[in-house]
Image (cartoon, rainbow, N blue to C red):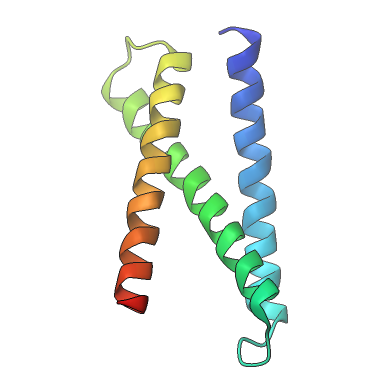
Length: 100
């Protein structure tokens, strides 16, 4: 594994932990009926980043269990992009159902 891949993996772990923590704080501390647009934007951004990280780790776990011959850095790179695509699909479906 080269240095850039380790940095990417560590960054995704830290970003996911912070996003889940922010999401928990927003869910338990903010009243959804009295919030402004900024609080809603922070909620959706943290939700997006948390889902992206969670899906990346789910796909990484599946890839590592399914294909043991694939190097970790290749498995993580593809899982990272599949996690992004899955999160974009979920958010697209959510916003399409909500605003159309």
